[in-house]
Length: 312
Image 1 (cartoon, rainbow, N blue to C red):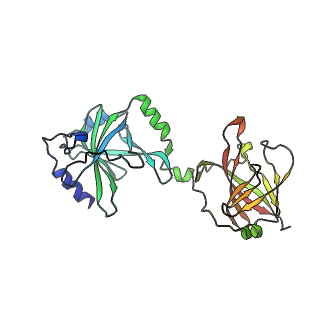
Image 2: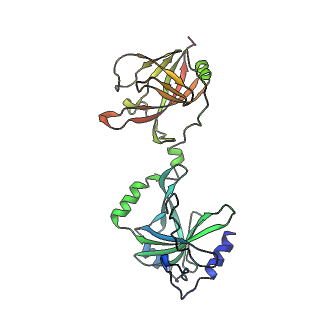
Image 3: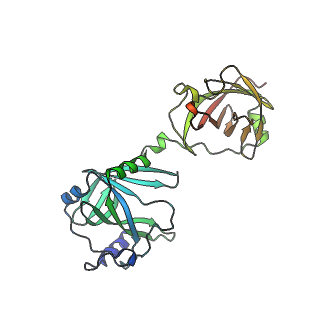
């Protein structure tokens, strides 16, 4: 279906009619470009989005920019002699990241492919401007959406900014930054039955990277000030056994708490509380915040606890 519509779009392109931008118009005919020339134009450069317009089935283009009023953001590119890096915003995470793939360019059809998929069809290119037709989205009825897009070469500063903003490699993101466990629904009775009367030893500590993703490197024993306390949980009190120098050096501390089932939160009112993500058998997973060193912003932690000893 996508291939059929794309072929129809290409077949109705008018060679003599140039793109008219926001005033409307049609997609221009592709210019024949040798692969060597394409590589010379794009290699070593970032390519910044300028505008794009949805292509109708008859080859006309919408006057309005495709991204006007939409969430998300258009992709941008960086090329080496044989690799294309695509910088993109991922709403599902949400975050900004990139993927790099070796590319192949068909100088006859103007087709750029990478990783087994088509990236775009080239309309024209020079050292400063790149114009392309690309698949953009799928409508709810299964109809594909193609856009005619214009890019310009980035300055060195623009490329550096783009790279800093899109710092996550999406090919390794899920392994380096796993998703948190699904929130378990824990009533007060559940908490009293499964957590109260036991000691809980912190066995794993991870820094949160995004609101729902954590850094897979275990912080315990590496960043000592991030290592969470061990607990003994009674019916109304937490006994905290510090494992780090901050924020409370010294011995165990006992504080009153209230379990708030609406938020699955153990609240002490002193900044020592935590949210219980899951509590099953002899294991408890929590989220908590600790002040970081040097007066910086608080650090959010994902911690895994193992139950120790007999119920008291």
